Image 1 (tube, rainbow, N blue to C red):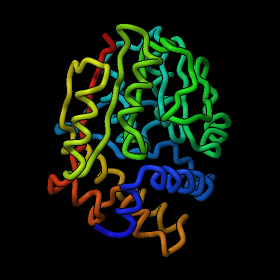
Image 2: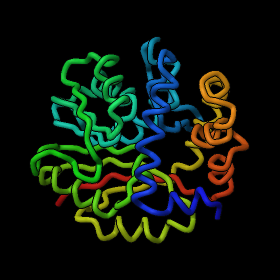
Image 3: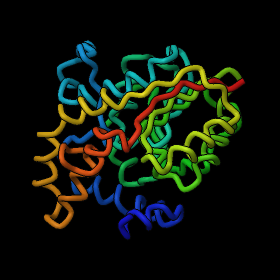
Image 4: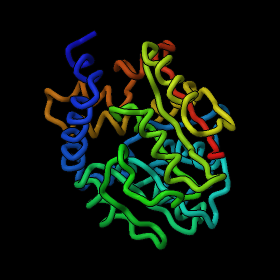
Length: 265
């Protein structure tokens, strides 16, 4: 295990690193219309979602959000997305699945400022806040969405408890993320102990790999144009480019990427 990996295994240090990385990334990507910070999703044969022309460049990332969020009916529901990034998923889901309200929460204040300026959609609002706190009253939401973010949290079991707190009885937690092999047992134990009922789960490793490959050329160009050279290797890993550690670990099976639908009893 490298020194960086050891540091990332320490919860408070991991959180501090992410608190620096994401605002830095938002500033470096300013003006590039990077609306998604998550990996992507494509089936074989292709998903074939009908998208507006403005959304087409982000198809593979949108398809990951669609896979996670469309597990239940969101029309007319009050929805919270925890760790909404640059808001692309929040915007698309609000425009297409028609929830009554959609709240995007993220720890990155620079990212939230970007979201508020970029995504002017009725029913959609953005709030700066901590996933480990969830600053909302109990039973506030019909659904909570969390896409590819929980690996950043220092206390994942605590996060699941807080998700259950803000969900209404009968509400759903729609979730997808990845973990390396040595984290699987801890990940699965936290999920098993959560005050939530598992309705369905799916291994989406193959679909995410296809999505990464679709986005590879655009991601490589952004890394070369927007990041200093000494960060190119980290940027390629973060973006899931073929040849980088995350992509190769996912391809080999050392990294697991899964999605879930939970219900609050």
